[in-house]
Amino acid sequence: MIQCDMKEIPILGLIGIVSHGAVNTARGMYREFDLNRSQASVLFMLHQQDSMSQKELAAKLNITAPSITSMIQKMERDQYITREPDRHDQRVMRLTLTEKGKSCIQAVKDVADRMEDIMLQGMSLEEKLLFRRLLIQTGENLMNHERKEKE
Image 1 (spheres, rainbow, N blue to C red):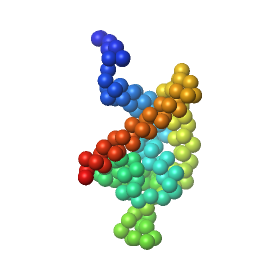
Image 2: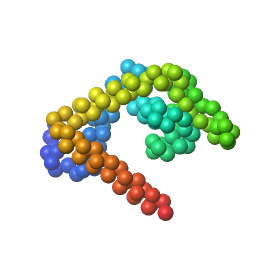
Image 3: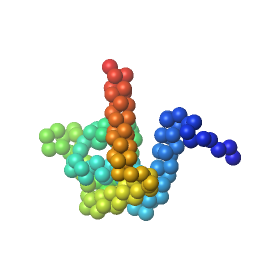
Image 4: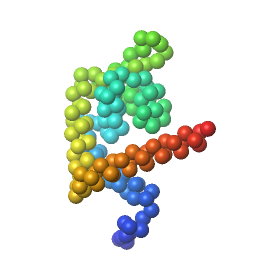
């Protein structure tokens, strides 16, 4: 097998390698709760916001409408979330956590903490904070670019 010098790989390639490794590692951790990473993100987002429409959730998670619909249906079937009509607009469905969904939040946070420990092992506090700031800036740059492309 040919080994690549990581220092020679473009940033986009490095992001792909790191992302793939993180997804695979997290997949195993979430499996014990019968969740995947996307479903865990839905649980966490609903925990933070209490209640959201499907459209709001899809936008926050940057997921397409068809993808969020099938995910929501499965999570509702598995009794992690409920869908109820909005009090002010009956056409809008509000998503909320069930007791089962709420009971998984700590496990979702624990997986996130374990993943962070694994990924940031060997970094100083200053490096961790800098890494976080750079990821946020990178995400904002991408969102701004997408917004400009749509104009």
